[in-house]
Image (cartoon, rainbow over all chains, first blue to last red; front, side, top):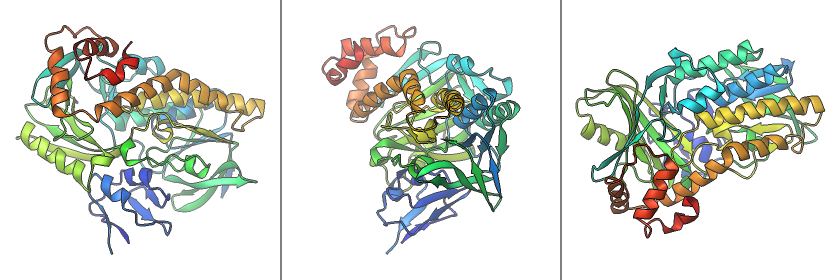
Length: 56
Length: 393
């Protein structure tokens, strides 16, 4: 499962731009993850603050 | 709830506001949506722009400008530096803006031209009939709202959805995004006169570190690294390291992060009833990461083309082709060239970078433009730059 640490997230939206399944959405100050997430982990690599993590 | 207008612009950054202003000036009924409750905040930007191009499009208000710089200084990994003057030194420096004030100023210009500005209003999808968009569905302060409009302009930034909803794949590959972090630093070591750029694969792999002065020993100190060379939290970690070394007594007053598209021009930025502008259209300069002015230029074109398409009654992709043609001829060629430079630049080792910058040390480049400097670089380093020869002549 993709988790967003909302205490770390600076809501920049970079993760939304690289998501291949359009599963992320930046809603003002938080990231929403939809059921379309394939847990590929691409977004976690580019998160400038390391707020995203794919957990088993 | 529902409303009707001629054009709905999604996103009130510089691109969206200029599009809304141009469309409103042409007599269209325009809604300009901003999902945040405050326009321009938080910033995701180093805030540098070239004076001349900006002044061609708007009259810069004094309160938009944090500082004016004399030029750019570029540091090689070994510490060697070269200086480029502002009037020649490329499009990215001249003014360092206060984006929070600037963005709101541009939205105000759109409003004064007649656009309806709607904050805390987030587009959540396109309204479609037989597959053809005719507006957006939105959430306005938590309540659903349908906005019918023959034309939707997506100026919705790096996280753009409008294009994807319209069938344009704007997904960025990891090698085509810079992941960035920036601190607003106050320190006696800040150079108030020059925008500084620091190169090196250790300090910013596939990108660079910048220090853009904002007046009185205050600067945006940030970095971008190539997505394909990043790992979780890397941008912030590297920035902390850089600041510790270069501004050991620096105090951090603000922290911002962001993703910067560097894919170069994408195949299509139009669909039936839809145009994309700015970061949403990936119109950012892939080499420098600068995207304010290109977004504004494209925004103006999109607003003007929207007016023509509405009056001719053809808002199909074909009817919006003028937008595609005009932005590609105005800014697209430069962006494509920058993309080739970026693809080359990210492969350079620190030794290569030291050689290139070191070779300019003995040349008088202060008065040269970027093109002239590249010609000199090529003459001095033909073997290293052989791949770029078609861009230099």
